[in-house]
Length: 124
Length: 107
Image 1 (cartoon, chains in turn blue, green):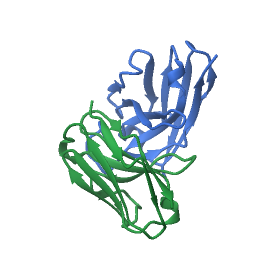
Image 2 (cartoon, chains in turn purple, cyan):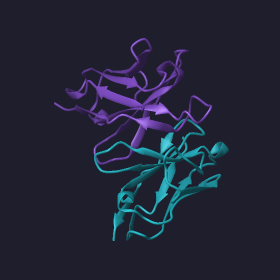
Image 3 (cartoon, rainbow over the protein chains, first blue to last red):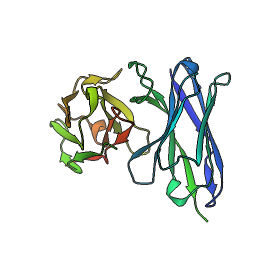
Image 4 (cartoon, rainbow over the protein chains, first blue to last red):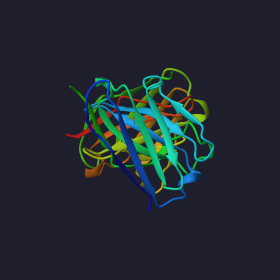
């Protein structure tokens, strides 16, 4: 069974930094691209960033380009999101997601498995 | 960026009825790379349909997807209590964008 467990969220002041982690289990982590998707309170879903399984390729949404950095440690089956220069509009639940294994393209893709989400609140 | 517009915003139906949800794209979605998700309150979204019409693993056959180009539909043939939730469409033909959601509520 695929499990994705996010951690590292919390309250941070505008301009501050936070690093999210996502511990993965139940599949061969290095074989799959992983994404972060966020959801502001009471709002819809927004894709944030993706990293390929083992080649190191990354993509970002325009809204976070230059401020957020996605990375992964395949030896630890863990995905990260380093968030710098945070803004109030970054307040959201952040979900770690696995690309749909039933499709061949690594990106863009649909998302077959999601973590439970972690809340990031940016406020003074 | 491809903008997805879902309609209606809210749909009020009773258990056992048929639900039809729409997702319209601002430009053609290549290769019908469109997915549907259901999100229950306080939970993460769950993949229902991908590639416009393929049911994800474990999804019952009361869920079906159709469409191509710019117009896509999710149909739930007979509503169960757990189906009353918010539904999102997502395109992955050109980067990734989501629709704003349709809330399916009990009438």
